Length: 136
Image (cartoon, rainbow, N blue to C red; front, top):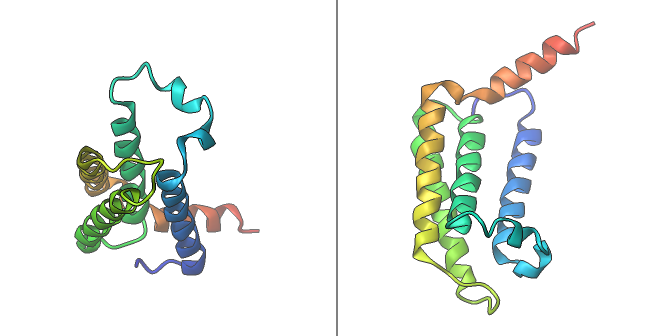
């Protein structure tokens, strides 16, 4: 992890994000009401949701670790996504799909590419901004 001033805060938010994704992946679609239907006009909307979700997770975690650890972020998120699909095999109202894993991986690759291009390490910049903003 980067030398962040508030590591417990960042770890707590990170865990919360993973729990939200886990909840979304294992919840019945009915929990989302008609919002799922709202995306039906987009071809392969489910795959886009997977890709965007894992893009956000990749950018998030790349903001908290050093660049040399990005590969660990990628591997960890791929394993997390694969576990979600595995768990869906045992939930009768969800369906596991290997194309979801592919969409997750694509999102991770794009997210880590964006991080490598300059967005990574954003956690330090956010803390610096916050510290400057709150100086008296």
